[in-house]
Amino acid sequence: MKLDILAFGAHPDDVELGAGGILASHAANGLTTGIVDLTLGEMGTRGTPEIRLKEAKDAAEILGCAVRENLKMPDGQVDYSHESQLTVATIIRKYRPNVVLMNAPTDRHPDHGRASRLVEEACFLAGLHKIQLETNGIELEPWRPKNMYKYLQFYNLEPQLVVDISAGFEKKMASIRAHKSQFFNPDSEEPQTVISSEGFYQSVIARAQDWGRVIGANYAEPLITVRHVGVGNLNDLQ
Image (cartoon, rainbow, N blue to C red):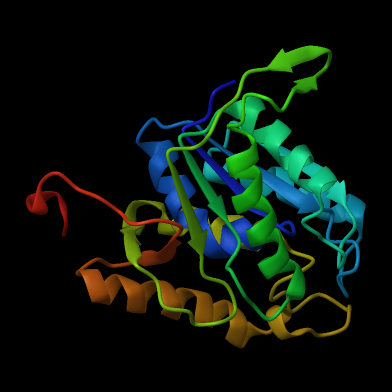
């Protein structure tokens, strides 16, 4: 299956928080989207790997994603070894996305920055003709995404691109709520964490509103560009 947009996250729920609105909005416009989680999030304080897999599946359906996979790399130990790069490069060749979204380049959780570097480097390796990769015994043709972007997470980094997600905002928030073990749930008896507070949930809404204000939209998500963005017509920019 060829995807228009493939979003990578170090953990289940990374993509929903950083780029859920982008995926929902583009899926609603007929583009084919997917998510690949690098880990099961098994080191998280709340939930279990089994619960998180179910929550991730439900969230992907809400966002309209065609596929969601988990590479089951060790949580808390995401690296950018050559072996890990080839694992991600195989996924890129398998789905041949035009656009790849990935974790922030640096963040509160060290896995996020490492995952960002891993995916960025894997995108390059996936296009090298002399690297041979296969899945299920089928050799995969080289493929390099046209564009790569990094979504913002816990830290307020400086983006270069802001995307109107007004059409997909409600689905973004619904996909976050699908991760019931992780976010605000007054009925939960598990330990409190930074992201399980009601304040954190409200901050996701406030951030989307504030970035929307910047571009004259109701809600928006910011992106960091991996390379310069080019346009042929200035009128294409809001």
